[in-house]
Length: 225
Image 1 (tube, rainbow, N blue to C red):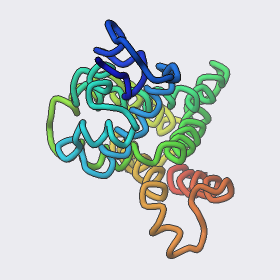
Image 2: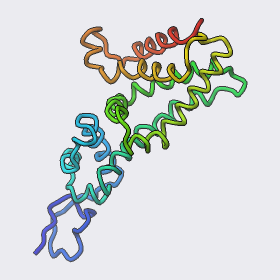
Image 3: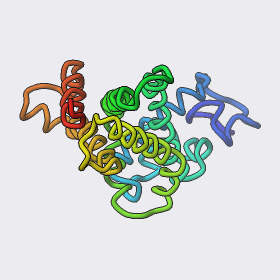
């Protein structure tokens, strides 16, 4: 006789042909996915792609390894899902730049884009920690990430910076492509090293006034006036 004691009736391989079963709550797929993403994000942030283990991620998500592989085929696809989840959130912030009128100057759009980048970095500090590991050397994951997500944002920033430079808002000796990396670093580091930031300053970088000051600092460094 088979008794269902695992993750619930919707777990693969259980339910059909069972003679007796304990009462189980129906698992919600969205809830399971959210727990998988949260556990995987923590694992990839802490251990990197190579160090993360699917079985440990399943345990942290409160599910079986069988259920995890039912939802996600392998670790490569799980990593992609984590990155998709984090990077698609940028659209919410970047909508502020896109909401500017077409007649807005490149300088105004670049200022708003910097605001978007900082506020997004504060909402997803794990992204910079993962990217620090992934972007250190060429890999299929980096190529996938670049072509799927980061290249369009990179090209948009560089284009706006070049136009803002022609408008006289940025110093002539600043290369737009270098500026993009500098801005991303300044925007991301306070949040990715939040413990150190708070240890030395006595303030959490995630507080709204701190986020506003980070935006102001970057803008003062980037723009001429």
